[in-house]
Each structure stands twice: as structure tokens, then as C-alpha cells.
Image 1 (tube, helix red, strand yellow):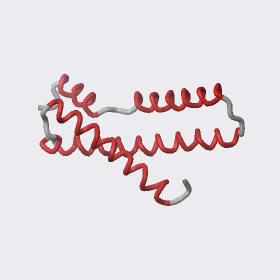
Image 2 (image 1 turned 90 degrees about the vertical axis):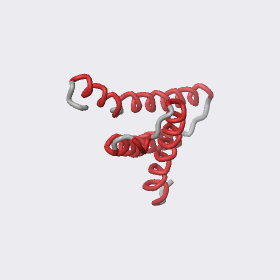
Image 3 (image 1 turned 45 degrees about the vertical axis):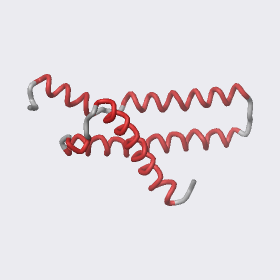
Image 4 (image 1 turned 60 degrees about the vertical axis):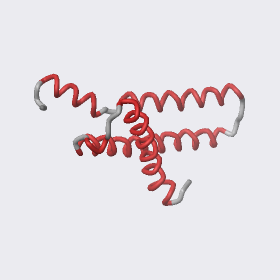
Length: 113
């Protein structure tokens, strides 16, 4: 996990894969096309996705390194570690600003057309 690919390129590819999957599912359900939206919305979504994918990657790398240092294995500690990883990922996801929330707020205030 020390190579250039794993630290610099993989999080971007991971984020792009997740973004494409979510866009595909949402666009099929809502019968919309993301390329017809304003470019700033897509840029905001992609930028946020890339940044958050780096955060996810480094948090999970930190958890993995901490786990490897402990050198003890038990079912209780494994369950605790998985719960901790799920908690960190959920907290990061909840704290990430979503562009549709921002757009809905500004549209309600009448600042966008």
C-alpha cells in the first residue's frame, strides 16, 4: 500500500466508480441526464466525491495500521473494529456537504432561477 498508484491514483478511481454508479442508478430512476445539468453541479459533485474518497482511504488505512500493530485477534475485537470503521464512514458521509442541499436552500431563498 506504499506505492504511488495506491496512494494517489486509486482513491480517485474509487471515487469515480462510486460517482458513476450512483449517477447511473439515480438517473435511471428519475429519468434525467446528468450531462444536461449545469456544469457547476457536476463539478461540485465530482470534486466532493474525490476529496471524500481520499478521506475514506486514509481513515481506513489508519484503522488497518492500528489493527496490525495490536497483534491480537478475537471475535470481539474484530466486531469492534468493523463497527468503528462503519461509524467513521457514516460520520464522514453525514458531514459531507451535498450540492442538492445547497441548491435547494438557495432556490428557496430566491437567489437562483
